Amino acid sequence: MQDSLTAFAVLTILAAAAVLSGVLMIVLGPWLARYAVAEPNARSSHKLPTPQGGGIAVVGATILVSGGALFFSRTAGASMLRLVVILAALLLIAAVGAMADKRPIAAAPRLVLQSFAVAAVLATLPPELRLLPILPWWGERIFLLIGTLWFVNLVNFMDGLDWMTVVEVVPITLALAGIGLLGYLPWQNTVISLALCGATIGFAFFNRPVAKLFLGDVGSLPIGLLLGWLLLVLAGSGGHAAAVLLPLYYLADSTITLLRRLANLEPFWQAHRSHFYQRATDRGFRVIEVVARVFAVNLALAALALGTILLPSPTTNFAAVSVGTALVTWLMAVFARGPARHLP
Image 1 (cartoon, rainbow, N blue to C red):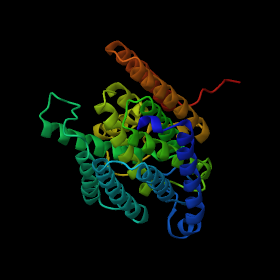
Image 2: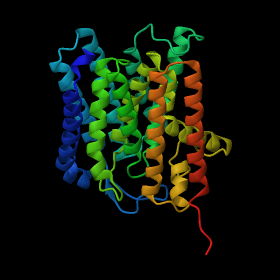
Image 3: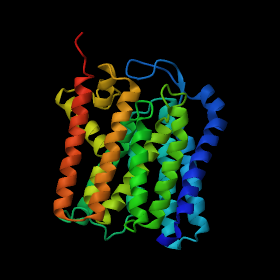
Image 4: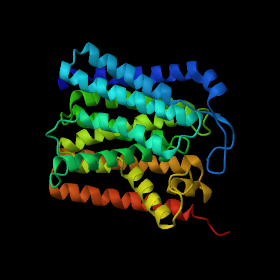
């Protein structure tokens, strides 16, 4: 079935998702500008009221294009059932995001609803898939629930700058699609990765600095859930190092920021401007300079991830993760320090 994804099919999925995403944003634009405007505040990076909710178009295009491709390919019943469960989970967590975009939701009910969506996605994983065999099966699933829940929210936390989600999602999904085309992932996952990549590219035009449209929680939460599922399947297929490398910048920035806020006894559940990429703009980097650096590092991480798939060995994995960690550490250090200033 993997062979059925020809170069024409790949380009068609990418182009269809990008065009549909863009068209949906144009159609939804007036409605979002009237009912879903993000007002600037002390913690935001934008200075003017800006419509949010572009995630409706991104997630909608991803579902419609990938769903259409899988339906016409006559996907087997069991696989289709799993995809329907994932679709339901995406719609649930998107609804949670839509409510949060309209008015704040208390942390407890928000996490409970997100947990239901994450648990549904984890239920679609094969029972024999083991990532931490040192734990009992139920213990591993609880660990994956907590870890995926954190991943979903960190994708949301990192969506705080124009193009930031674009420069993260596009390299990850392109790498996942490439790994799938090489035969290391189920072909359905390859189709979904391509559709999400194309839909995000369609969003990029509207989100370019200075953004005319934001993704919103309605987009960042389901994108985080979908990426988390794709990365779990990659790890379960033997690509443990690749699954860590692809989102490494997001993982590092968010986790270190969370730990620092916990150490400082700050209310970590509240919005803030403590992420490294936010501190970079506060220290004088322009938005385009920040996202360009993140994009470059993410492309390097994607290349390292592909290397661990093509040349699988403990040595390759260790070397790739070491180089990736060094790159991400360097980037966060640059952001924390601010741009170099030349003396007159």
